Amino acid sequence: MNETIGKLDDGYNCERCRNKGLIYTTGEDGELLSNECPDCFNVRASLRLLKNSGLEDKTFENFIAKSDWQSGLLRTVKEFAADTSGKWLFIGGQSGCGKTHLCTAALREIIFTKNRSVRILKWVEASRSLKSAVNDSGYASEADVYKGAEVLYIDDLFKGGGNVISNADLRLTFELLDYRYLKGLTTVISSEFSFDKILRADEAIDSS
Image 1 (cartoon, rainbow, N blue to C red):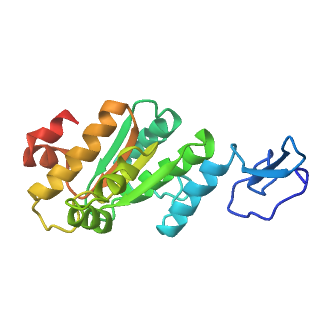
Image 2: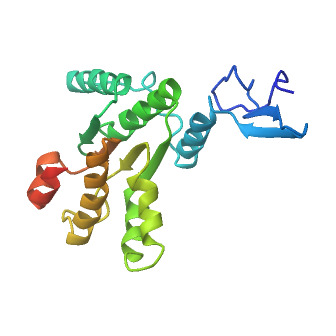
């Protein structure tokens, strides 16, 4: 059964499970057991997240650099994706500058080459849900999904509030980022706000 070729077709080829997503073993009593393939489970789960978020087609190869600064940014992001140990990536800028494309391309590289688990926090939807649940019993477990993710991508940080960053948004951001900073967890952030503007909004973010 382990030699049978599977039918998973998500762009990733796993030699260990032969694209079945499962590894078969037998128990002490001869019972057939199946386990998720350790070589590709994180990859496939993360690729599904990209697809469900509408980001699956963003790659380094199809990024079009129209200016020198975009070419330089592309090189920097590639360097980050090649060695993410203890590093964060932040890209701020106006809509259409390529920040979401490059952040997603970095995630794809991390997924394919490092077999790491990725979580995506789309700020507009997820922040609203987290802030509304802050006093509920389920808040901690919902927030922990993002706080403890092996790799977290916060897409469009602070989007949806106009040109103002609210205190509630700052508190949520600090909670997420402070935890991840202390744990040394890889974090990728895109935002229409510049880094300096975020720091000016609340100096507490500076410690993250």
